Image (cartoon, rainbow, N blue to C red):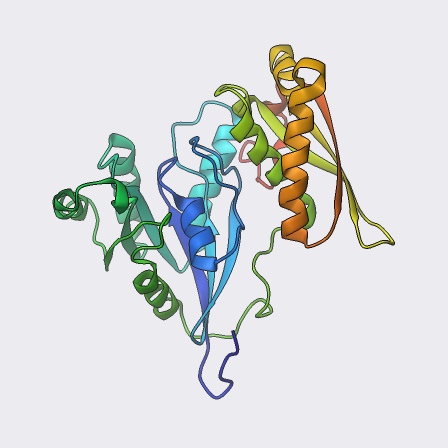
Length: 304
């Protein structure tokens, strides 16, 4: 988007906060018009903060997709929740996104209460409105308004795009005046190495049983640009149990080949070049308690 240099610019951070599976990553991708954050039907897909850079009117909106907030058990969980609240604390504005189909759960009420107590400027986004009876939305909005003071309430479907234009305009108007912090053609600050890891992890979520994705992490060991314009990527998948390794590899290596093939196609489109992807699976019990593994996901370890 070409910006009129004679007009004052605006720039700031807006955090997208909510419970797991509320549609935060889908919303980020919809607002930016690009696939920046991985999306799966399973909860807790996003682990680290992901920045999406949105150019709208004379504003540069820096959208922070945060992990879903839940009751942490592992060191990794604590780092994810800390990243979510850290994203809210550092932002100029926050959007609380709520799954309209699930409604006002205990987790949503706790998140709303904590945001209300922070004094953070806040708006409510009721998502997945295409999946619920419209008559249920106003009562839900009323119940939510009792928990926090929202400047605006938006009713949208991130999946279909319904209601997105109004939210776009609001985001652009809500960030403070100031110069842009990133080049206008940037979409994210996510490195190619981390992007590769995330795309592989997305395929693990999509192609394996419920318990497997949460016991795995992916690290890009090598990312090399070749002379012919292609990219060679070597990634390692750490699993916490031997049974998970067997599932990931599959009979005769069929599952890991399919994970690699789909991730390779996805990365070729995102990187706009041929990709040669090589995956290894390694059993590493307790990886989710290791500071090095947590940092490799893009998280800060709150325990250290």
